[in-house]
Image (cartoon, rainbow, N blue to C red; front, side, top):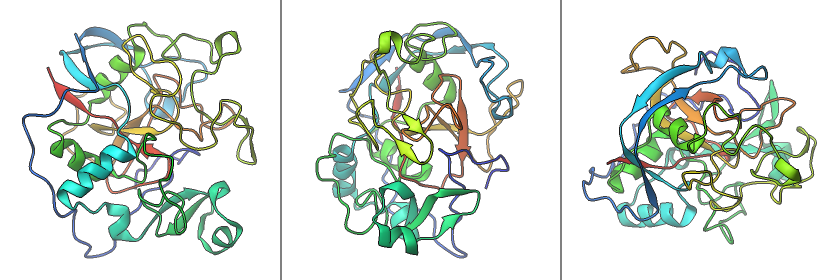
Length: 310
């Protein structure tokens, strides 16, 4: 488990049980990934990071620094439940949450009986460890994916996301690629569309609206996940790079940006924030914001999108 405080939208790590096997059935990497649903970005130098007065210095959001990325392809939206189901059907892959037997679910989504019996985190009691919760059953026993085929798959660990990417002939984006893509061609703006959260009163992302964690008005249209193509895309055509679900990146977590990318570590970087982020507690839906979790961790607000070399 990484040693930073866990925000509302990044629950503590799920550690593997003693002796538990590492992910099995890892599909072989393909070289002929389908480019449908991806956009080719030219790459180049951009200013990465931020010095927002509302930023979180301990997360290593800064300093603002020039970073160069090569041209690459990236998914215009997060991987959907339908697409992940196709992967599972083709490979027989079993996610880590399914093997472990539980995953984190936001308490407000659970029926009363399940809320009472599911263990909660002392420092973040809105998170329940729900037996049986997984990508197929996002809220645990009795839940399903009906009507959510076009929503982002959740309850996937970094290892699960990496396995999917290999099957698809793709990979997970680096943090630099993710941020370059999320900025959509704008330089040092707070959000993918500018500096105002709701320009002209128009909602541009799926985050917590109301008073966290007791009341979500769902004024933007969604209490939980939204369809992957909800809201307007950014200048590069990417959807939901702010809010909706956290997205795994390839990079090991570090706050030392002067050093080379670490070749190993204990946590993987995540970007974008989620539907649980709120300005009063976890405003990590800003483009420069970031957090991390261990590669075997999963929750009901974490998904991913893929990238591929040009």
